[in-house]
Length: 287
Image 1 (cartoon, helix red, strand yellow):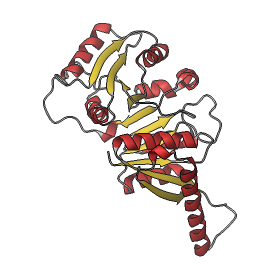
Image 2 (image 1 turned 120 degrees about the vertical axis):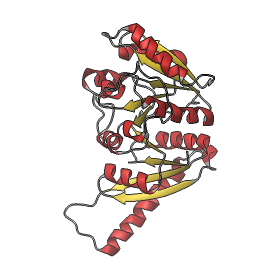
Image 3 (image 1 turned 90 degrees about the horizontal axis):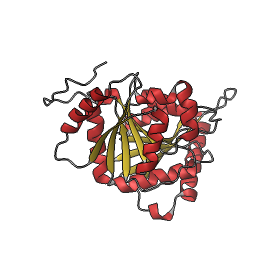
Image 4 (image 1 turned 30 degrees about the vertical axis):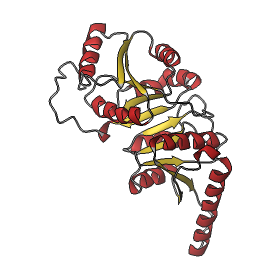
């Protein structure tokens, strides 16, 4: 991992997000690209010179924010500063492409009211539009040693791509990956065990991950495991019928918004091609 993008809107929890991002960048030996997106008043028409002056001012504000809130232990992290004007989600995704960003780190909610939602509008839009992984961090979350990462699987081919990426993370941090599946109420438990066994067989001899099938109600059982194993990040693949949808939609969103305490790492399904080497996944769902 070479480049991490951290957009900021200077919300109250932005200093904590900044130092969390700096900690990850330091662990990954990556450059942290910091970014702020601002808008122009609709009833004003600044001249080209005024636009340049405003951009320079906004850049100074961003640098000042970083310098005032960066902890001394992260002085060695390489930094870059970018400001943009327009829709935040569009500017963020564009910069991610232009700067070859490997990971976008964002707060789960911005300055607006969190309400019952886990993600703010901008965070959710970036998750939907960006091809690179997005690490969404709860407000006021302070960095803790990332010794354990949970990956939630529904048994799909592209889990392999996400797990391979997490294997790289596990080496760099270092951390243990816990590959988990929480059985649905109507799911035959033996099928889940068989599928998990085949996923485990892809990594024979590799000790970077544990593979477990959990039974019980999705939200409390997941949270119980997070607490028991000191999970620092929950990772998942973003799909139409994925764990992410189970979390952010309907009553689950309201429950998780009150309970979630760790960052969520979202991998995009279309960012991973099917594996090119032969593996017997006859038990995996391809829906």
